[in-house]
Image (tube, rainbow, N blue to C red; front, top):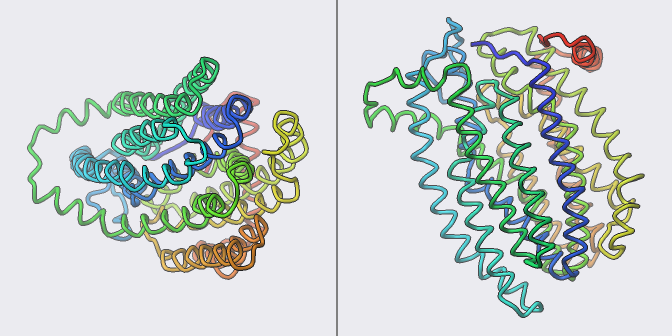
Length: 477
């Protein structure tokens, strides 16, 4: 069933993104106000450790979601790399159910492993860096975070399933409702004096509610639940094993890509925490969060249109691939630049009024913003290859991330360059290769010039705008 996006999908995409951004705008001042410098810095470390879920996921969420898209578009079977072009638009529910069963068993195993490691190694790390605080509050808060991460991992694939079948509106509704709950619980528990523990309970509330909503809406979307119920045949264990091996071929590559992204971004916060006071770590962490928030807003169309790109590929629609890719690149580039200027000019002065010592300098924020732009612009193009069930960039990502960590340790430890050393390490590691090579390769394969990208991207973006103004249905690409 071909994936097309409507006004409703785009509207909820931006509502979801803006509420996520608004949540940070609302929660960060409260957290900065109610937590002292050490507790606030520790909260930043928690955020980075929470990002470790992408490591334990090891690419399975993305890979299973992509294969659910292929099943939804009528694929006869799934391949380790590439696809068999669809001959029918009708969903293959038997293949979808087999994919889902394999997915559930895999995530039960990896989420349990993640919980064990977080409660052992993670707890020891938190106990070490929180010694100056001298209470059990950090450890209690971390255990709550660990449980939340476990639940997020175990049920996290339902959100990916929603995106895979093109239910972008339902996917973002789950984000909106659960994020709203997190805002309320965070503010309430901080006001009641629960401190860092309160932020942990709020994070647990967000993750649990999001997964419950996503699961319910997936089964209700366009008769998926009814279609799956009709598959009453017991799926043999050998077929589940074969499905796992098919998915594993690219999943471990996606996992290494996720690990590389983590090392190139969030891991730097942990390095900073080892060499600098928690207050300065908090300032750096805030800068990373602001840049990440801007990239999330700018990448709304990019993420929403990935199922469209996958659908166009399995249908062998070259024109739709080119126009969708142009929309992804043009929308991200223009919105990211606008967002960084807005945050620098308006956002920083407001945060500085609340806690001046915890706010990063504008020049440092712009440098971080440039780095995050490079990362996400690169991802616009690598997503094209992943949508075609190919991961050719894994080795390059590993090399760049390892280079980043080595340079970061040298700049912070031996050279004592501080925050600027971290940023320089990040930029050098990406500009050497990944920042430009995948753009070149994707354009060559799509036979898409830079001029066409800007021209068609602008056209597609104006279609979205005009459709909102005229309240018509969007049939982009």
